[in-house]
Length: 104
Image (tube, rainbow, N blue to C red; front, side, top):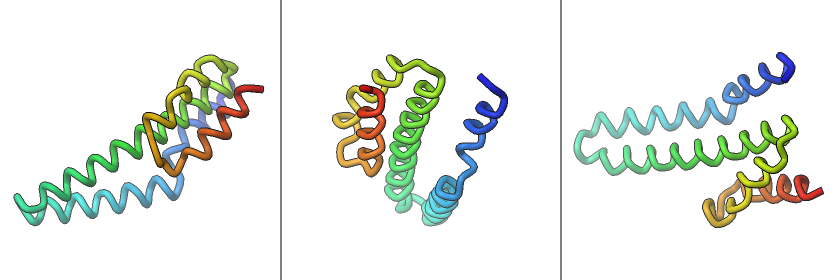
């Protein structure tokens, strides 16, 4: 893999959407901890949303890396159950487009 490709994949987390999400999640977690025991449900909801967002984004990124690296079987395997594992996810159209692209 070329150094430029490695640098591009390492720079993925540094986009504005990720930074905005981290900022909002940090503010919500700070608010939850300042409330005390009554903030625990808010902290739980924020952490679950953060985990789901992270897992979905990393799955799509791994598919891109596998596809760009020439490992189409791995990319297809990562997308095989995407619709059932992540129902109603906003990234479903991206996963569907990647699936169609990998079938060619």
